[in-house]
Length: 83
Image (cartoon, rainbow, N blue to C red; front, side, top):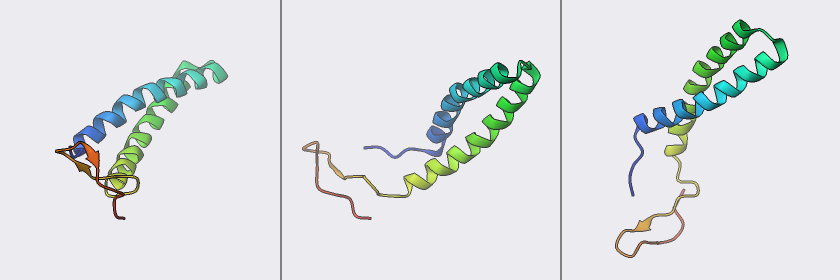
């Protein structure tokens, strides 16, 4: 097992935001036909959602919901995690 670092959360957030922001910008362009508006909306959306995703990810890393400890020697779970 390993512990996920804050930098891993940042990298995951950025990679997802690239895909999602391109989708948003393409949709805005399809509806408005204005490239400038599409780029502006895409950039605002990207910055805002990267920050929100990072906070969300770090909060979830503090919870034990759905996690089970792994017996490293046997490779099996030892039962449900305590909340």
